[in-house]
Image 1 (tube, rainbow, N blue to C red):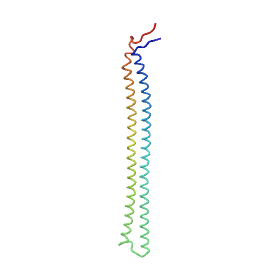
Image 2: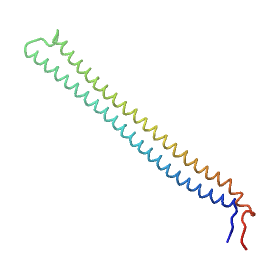
Image 3: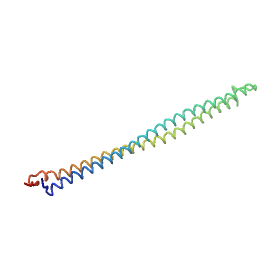
Image 4: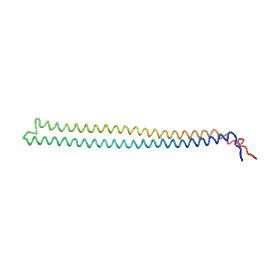
Length: 170
């Protein structure tokens, strides 16, 4: 049977307390990593939404142009069928105006979708920053807990290891 002195009790107390802190630290790290993963998932979702919004803008602008050209061509055909000269004068200008208006509408539609996409990209950047921050917190927290534990052991271990610290019953 062995009798441990105060310094030995401090070492054992420091050891178990430090292990408890590291266990708590591991749980904290898991929580930070979980939050980081959620932020990464949200960032990926926002990037996908930005891509989808850009594609929608391209497709809607294309449809807008086609629709405008079809409408201008119909009007031009009606005027030609009515015997009007479509190669000059107001008929030609109306035709060109209709085409320019459809181009303008298509550009406006695409710009609107581009703005929405930029908003999603901005959100994605925020989520990526949040993920990096959580990963950084996790690393710092674990290093802090481990450093604290090792510092406590370093302080108590020399006293514990001295030969006169442990007394034996004989």
